[in-house]
Length: 334
Length: 201
Image 1 (spheres, each protein chain N blue to C red):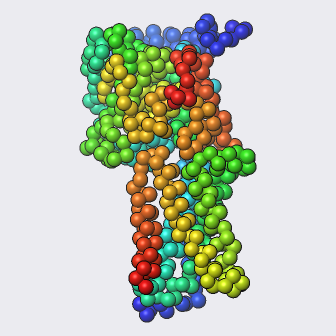
Image 2 (tube, rainbow over the protein chains, first blue to last red):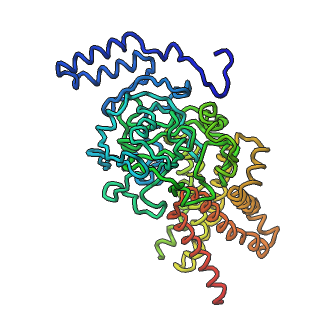
């Protein structure tokens, strides 16, 4: 640990990442409660306490149902940056199905129907399946991960997500050898999403990753944030979070995950291929045609008159994900 | 129209218009000071000052067509004030960019203006407006001669085109051209009316 290489192949967890005795015994108590049939009622408060005992310390805003996660042990999963206020994270974001202005999703997304919800996994896999949201919630233990989020527009946030690595689901469905890419199809329901049908983008909004990108442990299938289930405007009930790519690569309200052998056409790449590449990795050296990507404004933290902060290569996740792009010209493959 | 014409000539008309033009600026200062501009106040200020510049540009260019079409010669009294408000808001817009986006770093700004046509077009529009604002007082008109003064001030037509192009490029990032089209149609109609009148004379 004295000499940290970029590869970081061998690293011990911080002592703070080791499960504390209170959380451990708390889990045992829960199992007992489950047996006596009181589990459901106790789950919320237990989960909250467990999160506190872990020191992840994300205080719940108290707006939606609790969804706690154990502090993640994945390398790079917990940034030490100050958390963005829940209010900002849930009222300032892009979700074009509910309007192109960043204040609109929070105003319009109350119409989104998240129950019942299914996610279909299809394409080049051995075990294609239709998962209900409940199946997905039970698939793996929830983790809390504190990621930086960098929007292609030049602003950033720090958000505590709840979920588990996308790779867990991928392993479950057993991709065929021919599968090279994964396409993430999001909901496009004109009845509940007022701006589906606008000519701004093609609907449904489709995003995609290379299979090895999707398999990276930092690629998160997320069900919650700030210790609660996702607000509708942030992509409820299940979304992707890829912290080293611009935010638009992380599809919201997923309904279909398709394994393919060819690079899928993605929404923004189709709309403006010269401006939004397939990879769209955060890269301060590759500017957007109309603005610099060299700096960013951290929402709620950098005051009105503060100079913008420098954007980091791969949004600060270079040590973890740099090797995925070894040998690639990232100026061409932007 | 007679009553309206008289109202426009009322001594309180100009101060009232001035107050009306100041309201958005006062609101922005107040909202910025009391943290009411949402999660990204810098972006909110840049965008609102840009949009206000466009709106005042529409208003000032509407003066002559309305004056002729409605026969309200009294409207001409307000043209200079509206024009100066275009300049006031474009200055605030440029200030937001220089301050919040560029941290007042002249080298960064020079590079940014040279590199990005979107910024360059906006900056040229600002430069073109500057001599118009500087020659807005009566003595300047006298010194230049009305004819040359008018020729100079026709630059505002070019500014209108550049402003729409600037806005179009900015919204191209969002692939969202509804509002751009609205301003393009309004400004286009105001300019087309002038062309039509010139040709039919």
